[in-house]
Amino acid sequence: MREKDLPLDRSKHAIYTKNAKKCVQTLLRRYYDEPTAAQLWEKIQLQYCAFLEDEPPMAGVKMKISIYDPILIFAWYAVIPDKPPLEDVQQDVFECFMSGFEVLGRVFDLNRRLDNRIANLVFKKTADQRDREIKAFPGSFRMQGYAYDRQNGVVRYGFTQCPNAEFAKRHHMEDVLPVMCNCDHLAMQKLHATLIREGTCCTGSLCDYCIVGDRNPIAGRYELVKRDNGLWVSVKK
Image: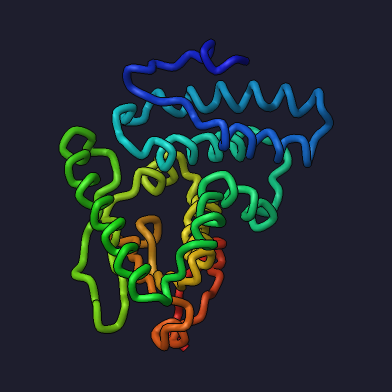
């Protein structure tokens, strides 16, 4: 079905991106023959629209990709009859959401103090944007900022509300959420950095981000561990 023909109220919601569509269609072709993949794709599109019927309107948020593309992944998993291990599709989902970090990593190295400071400014600007948006879109990301640790080169921020986590809870799909959360660790690795995160909004009240260069001694104090639900968390050694 063409995207323009989907039963979607565009005054309230946005369509998924071409990257998300490519990701899902690639996964369909991997596990199914062409006719079956085509039939499932149409069912996934309709499930995507059905999911949006009960979601808060957020078509006007600036970072639509971080809200609407995950819903397509949820729709894919809800529809397919054979559920592959999510760890098998982790790289596909990462490339869907964060392929740009591969390119950024050729330029930025967060072990360098200048690049580290630039990253802090970028995240601060994002936090300011989120603060402005949350007033108009209370269901969007609620971001919490922290002072930049210039001495140790530590960039910190967090989310006290994540629409992806709220969606997963509403639809009892918490087991699918980690395949998206884990992308943050992979993204930071591309920037020669380590994400130290001990919890997310799905498992607690805060999705915390502590970012340091991967050669920073602080990074060496933690190891990345996979929980039973598939979520990668940082644990002190």
